[in-house]
Image 1 (cartoon, rainbow, N blue to C red):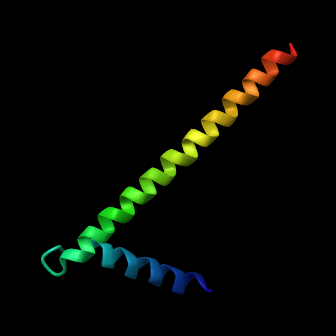
Image 2: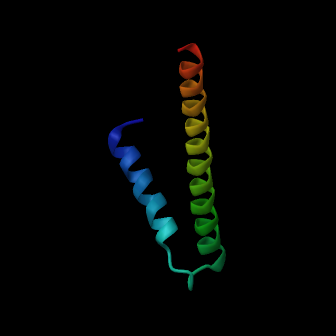
Length: 64
């Protein structure tokens, strides 16, 4: 896939999510749901990273 086609796809996706709720109520609900999902994914990944860092620190302390 070329850069220009990727940019065009991204632009079309952005325009879809930016569409006004007056045009279609389900579209706005879907975009809100997707943003919430991405937020929860980021939070989940963050907690996993934090937990792994904590366990690494504990192992280092135990070795000392």
